[in-house]
Image 1 (cartoon, helix red, strand yellow):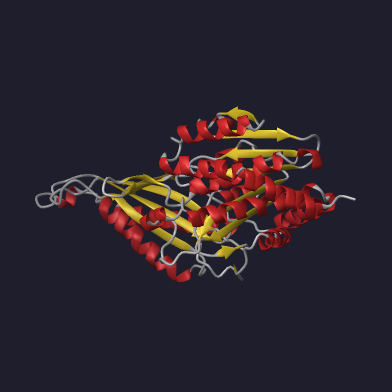
Image 2 (tube, rainbow, N blue to C red; image 1 turned 30 degrees about the horizontal axis):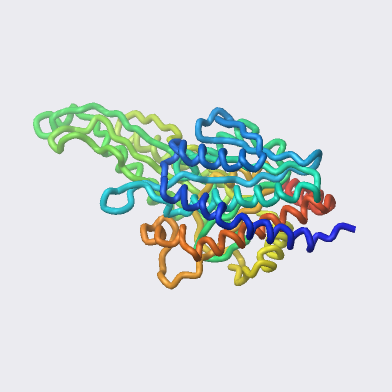
Length: 401
């Protein structure tokens, strides 16, 4: 009879032996921040490390220059994928340089570390251990392109962890559409011949007014927020061109599709009132909401508690944004977990103050525990075919709702 507990204990020992190398991944990415779709140093470093541990590498995965797939095969069996992120955020410090204030250096170290540890246990199971490098999470959302390219069709389970302000197994993300609106009118001298003008600035302002009225009649989970990116050239000229960008969010894709249509109608209504024309298009990928599986949450909780992580946020009370991992969760069973750092300063991811902590000893402590929990969860699934069957059945049932 297979002793799963002993195999997990062995995985802890292996992770401890790899401690310095795993921390080195986090440290390298933290000290070499790159913006989305420009993460060439990160990809080179990660793929070199994985190759040294016996992983086969596919570069330019899904025709994305900074995406990759690294695979370690242990025979026919379940395929478990760990998703690495490695893009930084722009504009920190006096020189406004990129920085990993979202902790993607930590994510990459955790997912690659978990895959490497699991590969050292190959004699205990059959299956595939995969790291998928997913670029530009903070901008275009590379996972969306990868889903559209069928990158997850052969994956049985996806695992990823993220730093946040709480230990959260019930993470929520909002579906989002990102729409750019461009209004075209006719310029004229605003004082001498205003009657000759068709004011594109009036149109964009009326669109905002329409959206402000719409906000009274949307669900509490929905969000509509936008900016005017171009409003005209000079106050004495009737603006003949304006542009605005909007993020439109909701708790599920079906409702969001209807809400986006209403926002577009606000723009069309503004053209009727002003005589302008409008062109609209997506300027970033659309993200779907995260599909959570209670059975996976229960399993991950057990493995986190085994390494000393508890005090979990209950009931999804935390505020939430949007992420391209939501799209992955719609096509493949996905366990996305957030872990908190034990720090005294009140600060959050994306804030400059958080840069002090994402590559700290406290972050490393949570990094090693996250790896052990992801590996433990993988072992449970790899060694219990019934467990994976139940997870997939739950996934399919939720998808049908």
